[in-house]
Image 1: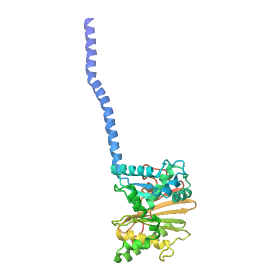
Image 2: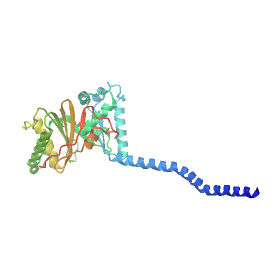
Image 3: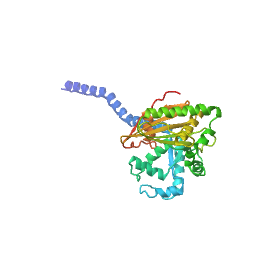
Image 4: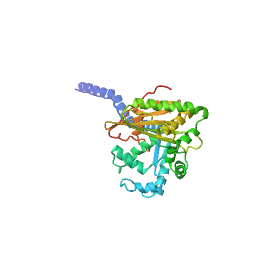
Length: 326
């Protein structure tokens, strides 16, 4: 009896002794699991912060008191006084810059916002629609880089003592001012050729092109912007005499191509009740097509937060057409 009991005891203790290391390992693994989880979360946060620093933001601002008052009509608009609103804008820009994010400031025009919402079938009284309009402004309108200066100073430069629309109405002289005389002819030829190629590839339909160029000058308060609406079964450049929309468009594009300026062209085509958006960037003296993902990102990202916003209903985002070299 004692012998059998001793054997059983030996077997029991032997089993216990053999199992002890596995039990200890299980406990250690359980203790390290939260640590590994925290490390993984820290890594993901670091990756998101790094990616966020590479996602530029554009903040569209109501620069004028009358524009701010016009937006007060919307119940979803949360701001109550213009001065406080501008302070909040300044805080946001400082925060973005502190995170290493390149921030730009554009103008938020209530009248343009209403037209945009009507054309896109959006409810104007939502923050999402304001974010979508800001994305449109960021892609097609003038903007200035925020470098830590007071917001009112930046807005004053953006308004340029008159109205940004003046820049779009008078780009011929401004565009030529940024071109060396010897570059004028070549750049003008390239611009005309690029426009012709874009319209040929676009085919029939209602087209709206926007060219935005920021010349490399000490005074960045004069971004060049030109819009060109075209319609018909066989769209073409049309009349290119001075001060026509076509001529203004080609001069702005020539200024960008001839000086190596940052800029781009956006084409919005309406055909059969559906809209298609395509885009190109200015690079190496020509228009380089954006990918479908780049076009989608430009229009479907909230510039202030970097968060995605839903695409416009009925709008397809497509890559720019490859254009034959000049």
